Image (cartoon, rainbow, N blue to C red; front, side):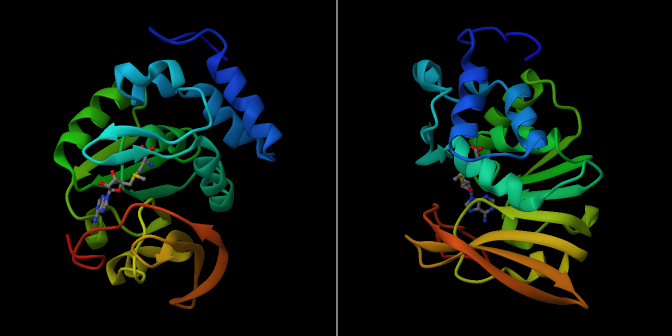
Length: 218
Ligand code: SAM
């Protein structure tokens, strides 16, 4: 770890990385991203003492910052090499956005709740990430201007794959999205081959609903 960032518990990031290793996270680039990202900047002040636990925490507006081991699972599945252009749907606190910024060349992230975008922008800046662009809006429409993307990850549960996201995925690219009911989904990894999406089911997941034109109604 390079240095502590104001308000950080000493050794917090190191303990979190060790907890992730104990839970089977092996990808060294992913572990390094956790080591470089000060999670306490992404949780409300009253929750900072819990920032380096492997727990989901409330971030306001009825939303949560996901459990770090869930982020790690997502990031391992994307198998990024550092050269990718990535689209994230559901910025939330912006923590995963910064993890991605250490694993890809450019990160584009969309969040539907405007106040979360404002908070995330400040926290991302404080964490020192400079290869991130944020958009407030409906992520089920994607972000056509910067497409195609080498990887797209959706951190909210959807009934189906939103058509614009399938279109905006690069040939050979990966799309990771929880698909299923409003309360329970299957985390699903799609790879685009010959313009078609090849599906691999990863396992059960529980995410907040993806609300938008190609997701669930509000
Ligand atoms: N990865 C985030 C983090 O590190 O804090 C947590 C994401 S949270 C589980 C899911 C987010 O998806 C919520 O902030 C929610 O507002 C957002 N969301 C839901 N539907 C959306 C949509 N159509 N477009 C963009 N964001 C959406």
